[in-house]
Amino acid sequence: MAFKLLASLLALAALSNAALIKKATCADGRTTANAACCVLFPILDDIQENLFDGGECGEEVHESLRLTFHDAIGFSPALFKQGKFGGGGADGSIITFDTIETPFHANGGIDEIVDAQKPFVAKHNISAGDFIQFAGAIGVSNCPGAPRLEFRLGRPDAKQPSPDLLVPEPFDDVTKILNRFADAGFSSDEVVALLASHTIAAADHVDETIPGTPFDSTPNVFDSQFFIETQLKGTLFPGTAGNQGEALSPLHGEIRLQSDGDLARDSRTACEWQSFVNNQSKLQRAFKAAMAKLAVTGQDTRKLIDCSDVIPVPKALTGKAHFPAGFSKADVDQACAATPFPTLPTDPGPVTSVPPVPPS
Ligand code: HEM
Image (cartoon, rainbow, N blue to C red; front, side, top):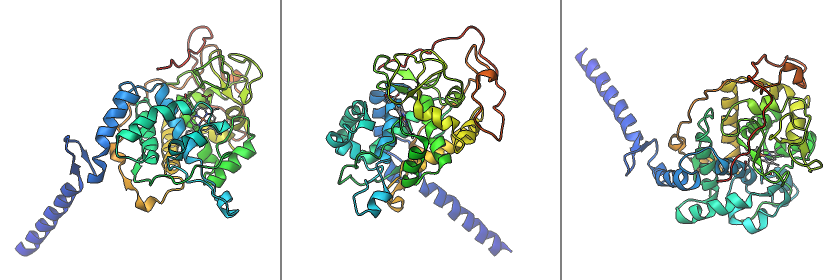
């Protein structure tokens, strides 16, 4: 009996010891599950202070999130099957081979954040592919309502640039967009989840006369307003008419991409689109899972180390899903045949205009 008790006590001690050993304490006192992740804390601090203006969810965060996608989607098994180089996915090639990739048409405006991130990659001992995904995950953590994204470390340097024409364009039709994503390994539900990124986003180059025009009324908050507002009937162009890839928007100061408007209304994606309205926990779960996949596109995940616990925990959402002032369910283009659009409150007051995202 005494022997049994001693044995179980010893087993318990061994277990808690293992748990203690597993957690590494880094030089600055912060802890992480794996000592190899300690190198990330000084990079995290530098990014927050000097790239994201002290931890904002502003323009650089939006651009850094866009960059995670434009780097990762440069991966095409279909091209490899044809015996061509199909790209290395989330390998940092958009920074390493920036003179080749940033001029691709679909990468319009991406040179700004590439130029802003390059000195950080040069200064720290980290690959461009790791840096892009790390900065994206940290950036998203600055946006209230966002999920805490995963981060894996260890992408090798890119050896070749991505081929052109792999990044979707806002004027592509839904079939072309879904086929491109399917080639890279993403289902239509995952495409919709990834587009939650457009809730913290603005366009500088779709209509060059109105830079910083957001896709929803709350571009600094990770909420479901993007999914609500893209479903409202479009009535106006916030700037000039006739821009390639732009659709009518419901609100002054807000821009709608043709691709977002189409995906919100297509029978293959409309119900998933609508399902995120007023369902913050589903939105967070789906975006987190799809981003985890995007961030390792084309990579050998067995060689990556899970450093997710280095990513800060985002603040919770405070606002509630709503129709912008002056709008109601009557303004919704009902596209999901299976389920009616959720009932939402309307913001009080007269119809407003959405202010632009300021440059920083
Ligand atoms: C159908 C696929 C997509 C299309 C056609 C598309 C297109 C665009 C376009 C045209 C812009 C505006 C760029 C500008 O004029 O400055 C933009 C911005 C943005 N996109 Fe997408 N996008 C797609 C998917 C994604 C995905 C999957 C992500 C991330 C996971 C993403 C993240 C962003 C972000 C964060 C911005 C805002 C950048 C800023 O505010 O500076 N997009 N997108």
